[in-house]
Length: 171
Image (cartoon, rainbow, N blue to C red; front, side, top):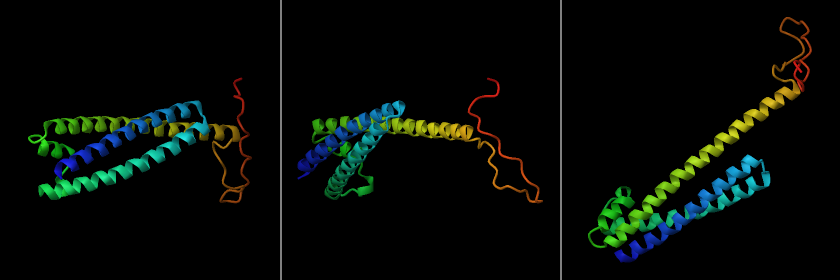
């Protein structure tokens, strides 16, 4: 039973690695679409990311179930049984499986780090783009100092808002 659980764990981790590779590629495609300001491609990449994340969640649930089975079989608390611990537990009995699990663990760690970094860069790019858009909107609409009303607290009439600044006065 233990060998079957280890083999199942390896299969699930292998699937997770493939999904994370696809996710990394999708996040990179998303960045390219953002740079090109291609809304259709951004939406396509977003939908693809969502589908991949759903698959990752499904496989993660299976991985957790297998890990729980191993924890019960080895009489180790579930919260203490992570992949490096599984590698240690099987190292003496099956060095080849231990090495495969260690390798897949390292690959997943690197992929997750790269996905997180790329996704953060995409988020920062979007936030900066939105700031530029809001500033351009203010410049075009002349709303750099928007007035909230027509009269002041003392009842004096306010000056008319500044006109839109489509062209610099220096030009």
